[in-house]
Length: 85
Image: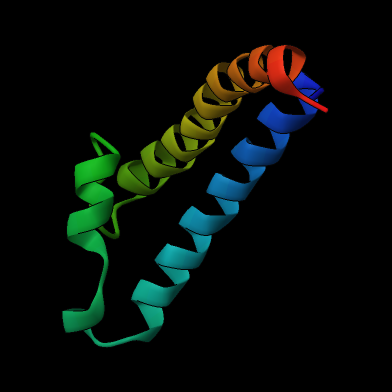
């Protein structure tokens, strides 16, 4: 059985860290290798290298992790109770 609080916080922190790595990557590599199109498609309101866009990306990355944790954990626990060993 998975603890919903642990999974949700873990996924939220993981996606937040991944977002920061993507931003750092974009600052280091040439523009043709940037992930801006991906970030703008997955994080509504995100704009590359603007303070507001950066904050929107931080918040939305964290919230995506929370959403995944809150949805995945009960589904996993349901199937674990039903068929788990």
